[in-house]
Image (tube, rainbow, N blue to C red; front, side, top):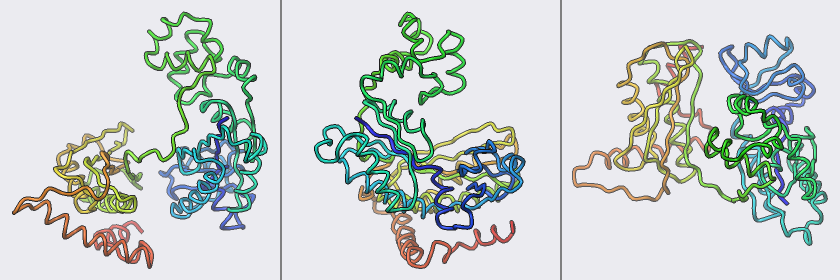
Length: 390
């Protein structure tokens, strides 16, 4: 049996935990401006139809008593680590898939932890006692059903799909519940007459594969209750990125470049925290018409130095002809390798000089910020930017 654990309204619940005055109120975590989006909504806010990714201005329209709080990522990460450590006490096979979600394979653990129900209840109780938050747990013989089950009885729920119940459950499962089936795919399936997962078995397999390609193969297996994916611990990080929606659309490259500076510092800091380097830097832009583009550049040598990341992202921005004003900008890195990967230096190699000099600066700043807070030392251009937007 596999468990899927999902913390209930995680970011919002953490804010209510840390500030009891917010308990029972409509709380969203997100940007304060109307151009921001909701990162998380409390269950009180969800009663008004407010959900993650909704624009803040729409959330305000739906609830006049809405309370908007800024994100505290470090605090969320701290609690997430505690939760994942607790899961590790019940099984060595824990696959964290996001900051507030994980799969746990408890196959063969019944002699130690008890039945599936007893194990799930023990985990829920342990988390509640340790961090003061509730979670919902789903259990099933396969991963895709465990994830669906965790959403069946929220919040603070437990839903178990036993092996002899899989066939019946799959027959009546709406296809929209399946991970990876968005609006377009669901519409395509409905045009074929497939509204429930059980409907797949009524169709010729080749017809489904011809229409849906590789996903058709997976859909056929899921309709039989088959999911070959395993719970895989310690999935390696493939990329790191950060982005921000601007308070006003702009085509001012000087202003946009300043945004990149703060974002590059954050990405570099995350790389160093994870002891990794990146081979590729990516610039992301979203225009005022919501059309999105990305531009990437490969590095001669992998880096974790913020200045190098900033320089490459700035080069990509300089080379881009802005066809409209920009509403969102972001920086990402990928092609991650271990942080101790050596840099191949030549005798007069400017790349190595930059790595060595600015690498030492980053190391010193990380130490200072870790001790006194990340805002204790701020580059002058970022300070001027913040002052100009106050």
